[in-house]
Amino acid sequence: MATHTRRDFLISSGAIAAASAVGATGSAFAADKPDMGFKIESGAKLSVLRWTQFVSAEEKRWMENTKKFTELTGVEVQMDRAGFEDIRPKAAVAARIGAGPDIILGWFDDPHRYPDKLVDVSEVANNLAKKYGGWYDVCKTYGMSGDKWIGLPIAVIGNEMVYRKSHVQAAGFDTFPTDFPGFLKLCQALSAKGTPPGFPLGHSVLDGNGWTYWILWGHGGKVADEKGNVVLDSPETVAALEFVQQLYKTFPPGTLSWLDPSNNTAFFDEKVSLINNGISVYFAALNSTDPKRHAMAEDIFHAHLPIGPVGKPTELQGITQMMLFDYTKYPNAAKAYMQFMMEADQYNAWLHDSLGYVGQTLKAYEKNPIWTSDPKITVYRDVASRMLPDGYAGPLGTASAAVMADYIVIDMFASAASGEQTPKQAAAAAAKRAQRYYKA
Image: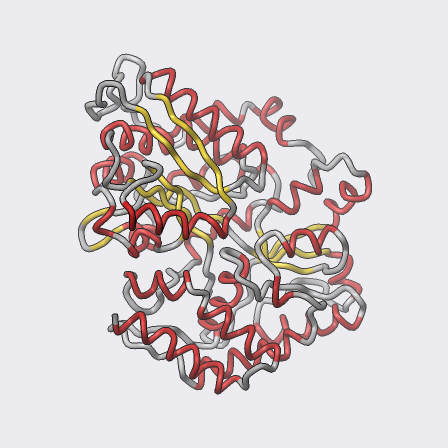
């Protein structure tokens, strides 16, 4: 178990210098190129809305990179923050009324909800792809509409299995299960030992969507097929709901109302010993000044989400995209900022300081030293290569984005798990809700 702190690692290994060299092929952001490849408008000012941090060093580095941009260009950047659940409605309002932040860091396929309200950022995306090994396929799916980039995928926020190793061993498991039957047996054994698992069934943007879509797809269920036909009311969906009915019996009370922070809190309060979450839980323990919480770090481990009957990874990971709205007065300044934040000098330092909480969307950044600085982090390096887009297997668009924004899949699982509806009833009701969006 690594005992170093993040800062110790940076100082002792020179990782920042190494990271800055990753993928660098001659930055367009040298001090003698103040326009940064775009003719920045005179008097330009920008406002940016991003999600509230879970790892303080991540946000600190983001702000330091933003300050560098201002110092180099003279463009003032106002940074505002909102909770994970609040970003999507705020972005939707901005698109509808034509006013708000110039750039919003949204979630999943949000750009596909209002593509005609966003500036084409293809030049930025293509510049970055040429320099940094190209985008992962799933990132191209999320960021593009046709042949145009309507969003810039800046990071994948990986949610994997976070567990107390001693509790898993006490439940009779030497290693973490890799398939659904083994996973269910583990959860049942943990519950019997009084150290249960806990997964959100409230309107949780990352954690709730992440695990419910994973279970749905793992059984072969899906909201829509390749042609965009709603196929949610299926035997595969029913099988997924029946599986979660069994799983839900192992949860502690209250998960029906859990939001994104809820499982973190329950884990540290020792009410649960297995959750789906990011690396932030581990580092919150490792860097805690509370002796009891700090001691938990040695017992915290991570594993990829087990594979279901379909026989391949079906992970839904959080992806955050920078969206540039068409009401901006300074599109060139905004594009310059977006590209600057993803250039090697800035992006590698941001990845490293996030401690693995945010993951790369461009392939060259797999080489960032953070991924091998501690073996407990390495699981999160691979999330972009294991994930599916939330509209799978159908096309992304206003319908898929609306289905997720309306929490249709989470609500379906919550309804069946709680016994409010049978699995067949829950699948049929969810399909009707989804059909409204796909017909529109």
